[in-house]
Amino acid sequence: MKKQLLTVVAVSGILLSSFSISVSAHEQKYTVKNGDTLWKISQETKVSLSNIRSFNNLNSDIIKVGQELTLIPQHSHYTVRSGDSLSRIAKDNNTTVIQLKEMNQLTSDLIKVGQDLQIPVNSTASISSPPTSTSINNANTYTVVSGDSLWGISVKSNLTVDQLKQMNGLTSNTIYVGQVLKLTATTETTTNVNESDKVQALITEAKKYIGVPYVWGGSTPNGFDCSGFLNYVYNKVGVSIPRTVASIWNATTPVSSPSVGDIVYYETTTGPSHAGIYLGDNKFIHAGSSTGVAITDMNNSYWKPRYLGAKAVSNL
Image 1 (cartoon, rainbow, N blue to C red):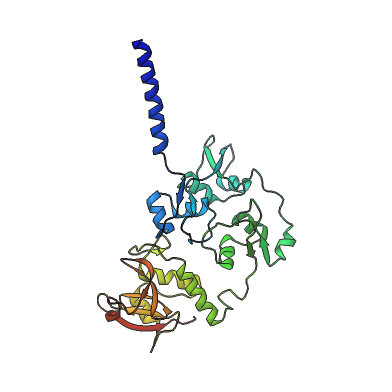
Image 2: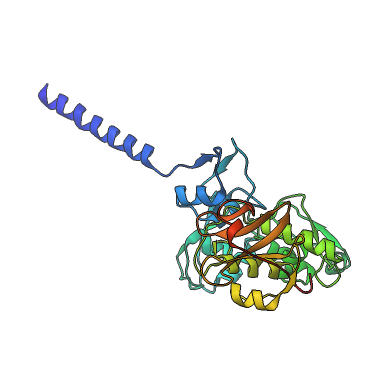
């Protein structure tokens, strides 16, 4: 009887141990709460921004309360064979080298025979026959179908991935079925857009990064300082400006009052030491050290006494 009792207890212990491991495992889903941003969710869940976007087919950082986000990838497996390379595996499985490296946490393109690789769920074992080069090359647009990737479409259309992203205002490689992509440069390219269109494109681009944290010296969507944010956003619409606030101040033209798209300057230490983009209605968007990228009222008690003036950017 004692032996049976001990056996039952031991088995129970194993079951309880297994259950506790199960509930402590990484959550697979996250429900968006009020005040959440993708960056905040990324920090809380330890899942990178790019992976959250990729796992949920997000084309922007806009999320809404109650939205359920997937935090783990759905994938299949591939075993590396002799003669394989990441680029060949990506091509054969209709994905990209970048996606393969992110999913498998690879820091280089080196792989070895027998290595097990995870393949994104939207990949297929082989690429279906694409439209003839004539039909896609002569088209102005392309509608995304199941299994497509930016890399695959770039190959079909004789464009680079960067060209496709620039033509379509994409900030990541994520695309979705039914999405219509431009395959030719139009009046929306920076050389042909009129002034008001370019200013609107600048403001739209700047607002994409609301919530990105402040990082001293940062100049990417992973983190910005104030001049890094300006440099990145203006460059996105084809306008080149210097990297530091002082050099931007010297390269821009003084105006008596700011217009939308102008740069407003502030003195937080000595001379021009902070800057943002004027949005109208006494609001500006900037990368603040305590707020990250945010829209702020110029008349608030902190910024109003530190205001130095506004300057216009050439070619905008």
